[in-house]
Image 1 (tube, helix red, strand yellow):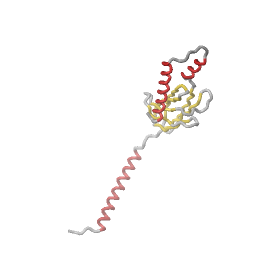
Image 2 (cartoon, rainbow, N blue to C red):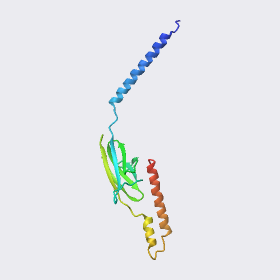
Image 3 (tube, rainbow, N blue to C red):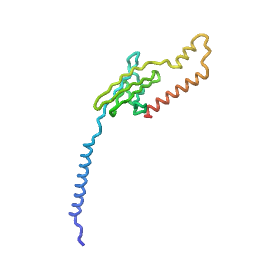
Image 4 (spheres, helix red, strand yellow):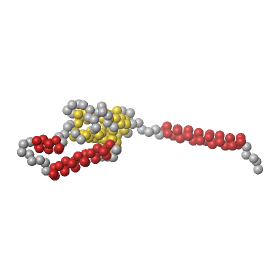
Amino acid sequence: MAKPSMSSLQSGVALAAGLTSIVGAGYSAIGTFHATPATGELVAVVRDAGTAQPVPGAVVEVLTPENEIVTTMPHGTDGLARRALAPGSYRVRVMHPEFAEAQRDVKIAPDQVAEVRVLLVHRSTPSASRQAARAAPGHQGASPIDEAGAAIDRGMNAGRRVLSRIGF
């Protein structure tokens, strides 16, 4: 029986390294031919319809045409939200507690930027209209049922905002 030498060990290691390099090069070549499709970019510009100022705190959601959430876009203080998306048709929904919800449809093309401008309209909140009614002469106050309904509305809106921000 022959005694193994250091040169035969070195030859085995060199052979293993060479085979690993060849397999890695083949894998890289296959990845080159199956490149990922180019994405497009969506830019949502969110402004107050009355003042044309940015609306801080607005939640910008990207949905499929069937209203399934794809992503929630981070919204800056400058009123812009940006996100790279796969090409296709989407619906953009913008929500804010002080404004009426707005939706826009948009089509994203590969290597292109699609800009959606959304002007949010202030809505009169139920609590504001109740406060105005209470200030009116002869008003006895809102009923407990009205107060409970307003509390439920506020809770539901807050829950939607929280779930939207964490991606649900």
